[in-house]
Length: 62
Image (cartoon, rainbow, N blue to C red):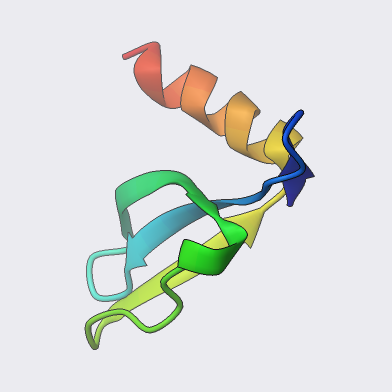
């Protein structure tokens, strides 16, 4: 979770398809807008801002 200048807290996450074990999405959401319940077979993993930025850097390198 991270905060911005206007004190809005953000969560950083990756969505994983449990059947294929592939990342199907990623993003950030404000604390009040975070979607926790996903479609069956998918899982949302919350990570720190540093972990999120490091993986996004690797994913966009391809």
